[in-house]
Image (cartoon, rainbow, N blue to C red; front, side):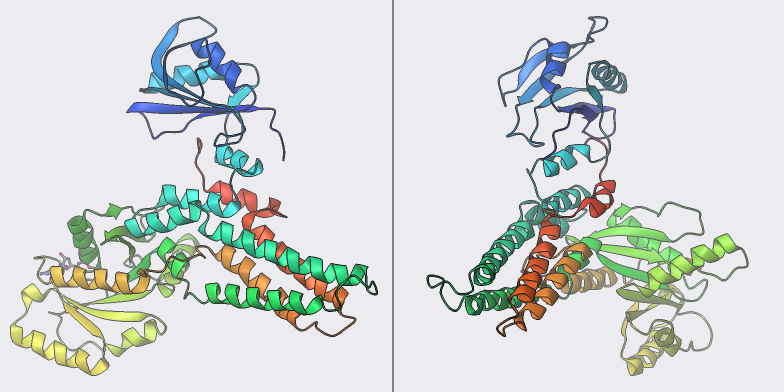
Length: 457
Ligand code: GDP
């Protein structure tokens, strides 16, 4: 594994000002950095109270807790130090400035601590991803899944599959290397194929999971659609206010989609308002509209909002035509404006079409309790499962699919004389698993994975 000459440092805790700020230092000069700033190296893994000084001026910057984690049994695998400072902006700036002046120390790049942990063999790639998901988890169900991944639920399994494959491969190679030797058992290929077949079925079963893990990671995506002035934005706003949710409008122009992230009984739900979707001649706007349509087309559920007070009957089946592949609910809004009789009529119209239907008023809040409970139930049905998912990303799925394809090919190479080609297929299967955990050939995916990390992680 590569040894990094640079020592990196960064603020690893959240945005200041805060009560406490954690600055981490990792690399061969981490000990020297502690010497320079607090004048000593504390006992390993024990918090020590220390004065932090600027080595240039010798002025005391702050009083802090210092921790020392000597490599290789540290998080990054390198010598690592941690300073728990008072979380003021000027304190942090002064300490980072002081560290920057120490020989061999430089600010860390995004995800660089974790990248070093990976490069030093402390964690495999699926654990890296689990760690990223744990930090990004918005809801309880997502946290659980991310935590399992970080603890190696998939990584350990993949590593054990890979070991078994390499053992099967060794049998085939023995047959190739010693075709006629008396002390090599006749049938080595049979047992090798037996193992490959067992593994193939096991991995195929893991893949047959209805994308549960990926779905939970992304959450239930619910698009709010319908004619202008039906009250789509009002519905979205009321839900967002009511749930005091993780409201986060997607960055961009006002024409972009508004997204609201909700935590409904522990399950993540993203509501997307399509009010901004309208045809336009402006190319920039057209691009926005295209993206919006794509997002809605990929939604798991469409709430088709209609104005219950609007005159005439709306052709509800247009809903079916607009979103042929998505489940849909009809949401009659503005029921504060209509009579009970009218609601009855509307109910019978929709009844014929076999949609789930809700009657609400975004203005008064009428019907919202049942409506939100319905959404929560939908997300639970869609995302909830007692079985933890192993596959949580498209990358995992592709690697495992590749493994199965290679094993399927291998299983057809049972005829004598096909040992070389059988060995090659087993090697390809093992390689796909190696890429999954990051043991082999991963340079190309690393930048993509670590791009999601922030500085200090
Ligand atoms: P959108 O174009 O579908 O996003 O519709 P808006 O949310 O902008 O609402 C259109 C108009 O209907 C606004 O004037 C809202 O105040 C009004 N409105 C929305 N929901 C209700 C409701 O439940 N009852 C009544 N009376 N008015 C509503």
